[in-house]
Length: 606
Image (cartoon, rainbow, N blue to C red; front, top):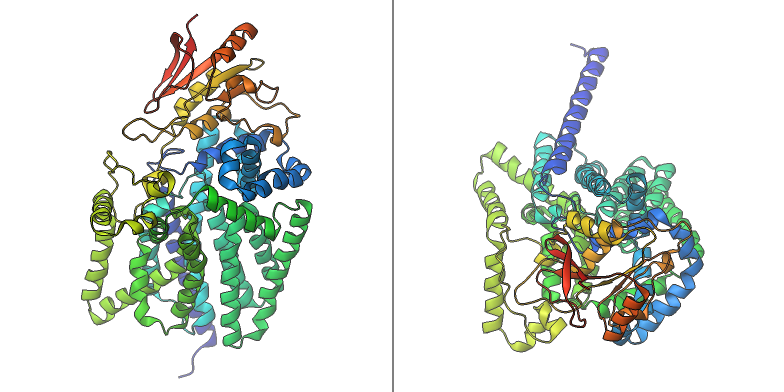
């Protein structure tokens, strides 16, 4: 009997509609789970200390002409910052405030897209608590979008490298893989936190998807859009362009090997478009993003903040979270073109991060976020294989083993692992190996004492405590509103010593930046280069208040300096912080002006 063509077409349309609906439902489910899974986090909770820097810089981006100032002062930033610091990093950064300030300016510039984005939120809502909440939700959405995009990457790779379409089991495997990543502490460290990685993650995922679509459809226009995204990735966080370039090279190689030469122009177009944007950008802000400058910047950063290889490698493992379990399950199928592609992609993505870690650079969990894209593809393929063998062949053993590993990694006590590892290293490993294991040995020349706090986090793949600090912005707002009063100059004396016995999560520098964020607005004509108000070992009266920065921050007050302030009738405030000694100052009677634990603001009781 002949098949009715119209009936066949209607059946195909119904299948396509059902297939599209299933795809949409899976991606929407992943988005909603990713958006709400760590709903308990407040703004600036369990975050990295850099978040306070970005919040502080967002105020400057909102209230000053940041890009124009960078364009005008580009050569001075390099001349007085990176060049001199590279000659003798430790001495210069410890003793010369202008060199440190200029280095900080370059540090901000290589993340300028992220800072401008937060600046727009501050511009719209003002430097308020509402702005911080809006920033958090914006970055929650960024991360929630990034995870389903990783599934789309897997779908596009299957369309490009396999003949068969993904079935329901495939989608279920990727759904499980995505949820295991969302449940990981590495995702918790990015979801909603005001770091440069969430927008970079989203842009990298978008670029990857667009480049795959361009190659699949042989479209120069889509390739050009992918090139724009690659440049935006550089604009948001300069060093994250490397994962984008790595993926482009892997994809181009795979296309050449498979002899799909008609897809090459799309990828080449993406590269040329991004290169044109970069050349114009590098020329306008020369020499801030010239290759040699970026290399010098990396070298100086290594000297300023030396890393520990063991901790760096552990951070890379934490970045992948529970995805590693599914990824290892995919290894036996390494001959499959999709899995082979993802393995090569993962290896090349890991290579520079591992080299940096072994070379002594600081590698934190958030910095290794780029491994998530190939890992999620591998994990999705691994879970799909396990589910397929269980559903079709009733093989329950692999499912039990993999589920058990996920349970162990997710619920084993992190603090006990760290304590036992530390004791084993100290008692059984040679002392000459300790410098590769302990951060305190690198910074202080001696192994630090065992932390007294009990880390309540569960899971073996948990970020170190220094990447999970909570910044109390509500208390900082109280202090900032009290200190920064329009048309009033003042001095703030704050602790510059080490913490007292025991441990505290309060970061002085982070708190100071939040004080300024909630303070008065900068004047319209203020320049970014004039706003770096840094406290050092010089006496308070070595600097005077300016129209742009009416509150001078300092950490040392001499008797003569106190007399000068009394004579000029300039208010002096002393900041006390729980867990820190009081600032270095003459013996005077103090009175409490404001108490917002862990902060206490004192004045002199005349």
